[in-house]
Length: 439
Image (cartoon, rainbow, N blue to C red; front, side, top):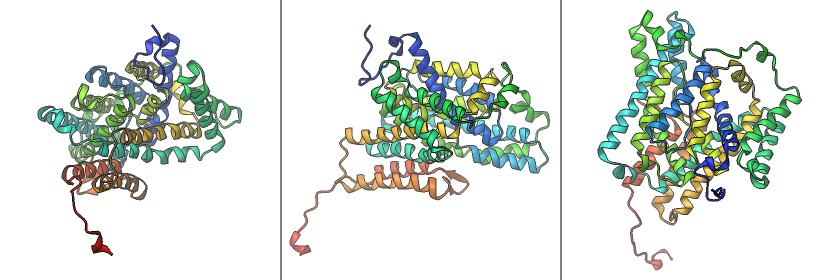
């Protein structure tokens, strides 16, 4: 069987052979790793459990979405504020930090249940009625905004050491543009390894914690699961967690829709219709709820891996599932988790600059291919407000706008406004203008 060209995209990576297939899976693993372990680093959640349920959640998502969507599920940043607020509230009541986080996980698990409700509504009303609210004039700017909203973290990381970051960027570009064979389809992995190696040679990586880490370890401890809460339950704190965190699901559902649009645009298949948005939402909700019960962060589809799809043109979901299996296996190896967690921030930043830029480029391509008429004022208004609100709230309001008790991210708010404007603004009206009137 001949290998499909990279321009057309590879939908069955098995044609590349087992070695290349395995390396592609490792590349997706490295792409998601930096951001995935950052959430437990910030909140105090268990890193090994995070890696375990990123893999398990991804496999569940693929099963529920009929094995069709090449998405990897990693730690969601949207719930960080909820984790930290409930953690502090619990500690103020005299609880240890780990137990306070267990209470927060109850709220996140309930937020995961909101995905099922939305999925049921979409299934009940029909995907056709839902999809008409997501034309390219809405989805294109949303996809562009996803990449641009992520870009700030890439710049922050790259600023730690621009030499290390630039090495990662140049290796990715050179490998992708001029590489031959396998080099051309693993540019991200090569960029990470080269940049990481240079940082190590320059003495910028402290490997001493690696010596203390065990080779094999159990990733989940009972004290980090919600079971620990019910040993001595505080029902007021449970209700506070649910009330504070559950509404965040409204924002993450909108972000999920944006991510599905980005993946669909990258691969060239409308996943919102097949397997259906109701299935992808259910998969995300199941992954989030299960992860939370075992003390790991909420899950979400990862833009980093969408960027890898865009660069490599390898769209086979099997590669993502292989990365998920690697994540599960490596969650039982604290030494490897430690090694990857020591990856220089500049390396992550350099690679992320490429990945996030590729996501925005997919949005631009969607607009161009759909021949959106920007001579029509309604289209200009919709696209302009989506972009300005998403980016403005992200960097001007700390990515949080409060509407009553609900806090929306810039991307979620922009998506809501874009959908509403598309529904109510009329298309071009034929109006006769008397030029003489303006002379």
